[in-house]
Length: 387
Image 1: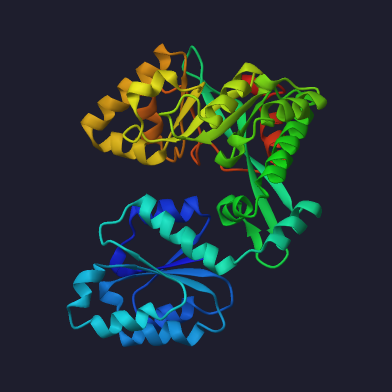
Image 2: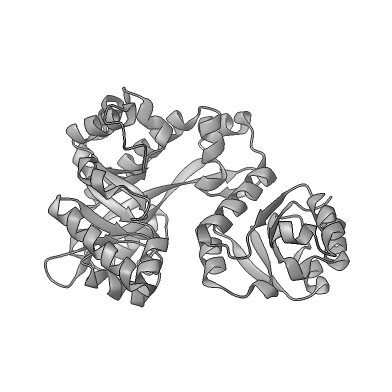
């Protein structure tokens, strides 16, 4: 899938980060004719415009391909101000397109990513029957992204791999999890998909261990699954069936309501930990978390979101807060992992705040299991001896 961006938006890091997060190609246009050429073909696209692009020529270019190519339109402009300007009529014409999202001029990675995901879901329009068929016909598969861990010295060793689900859709091609898991939750199919991921990840872990690769597995766990009181026992049964221990697995979850200590999801999390599974708080952003309740949460690890890292690198106060949170986590016996590490500067920064683990494109993208095996076999038989 392609993200077609107006040059008036600039080649910002936000655009690059969103394209990478959503696995999109990134192309720019500076004229209607260039937009025409980028809209050729029937594959799906996102088109990002600014107020400067609201013109009859752009409308004509998009209208020409509307019937033959699916696209989502994201407009970064002050919509209310445009209503009272000479562009009001153009505004109404753009609103007639089927798949449109509006963003503030001053948008960030989260708002742009959310708008793109909404557009993508409208383009796909996946049905329950498609997802059920995918489960039965085993169209899903896993890729694995390594996580490195800081040792007592200066080395960072690979100890874990995060299992990430993909879908080889017979019509749409390769789909990432954000393109179908929301529908899976809506159709109440997330349960069998989650079991598939755990079983496949455990099977792969068992294979690696027979080959001498002493990896552990990290698995994303959907929030809706945490209301199932039978989940801990069921997952323990799957793991033990494959000859593994619960401590070999970390479940990564998004932060839930932490005000009610009797909430069902907290009871499930606690039982998972009692059975030996590790729990990681994913997408930790510091400012959105109640530090007063931090020590009460049933987590073994916090996973710092890439946006929090970027903010801390450019803001002295944010850096101090992040370092303090890292110190608090260590005092509570909680490890700290950074996600979205893409450059050497971020790598060096993480060493200054004593981060325990990291993952991202600087370390490795998500790859197929045979690539993991080949890479680490070339360096040593025991993955725990490999940086």
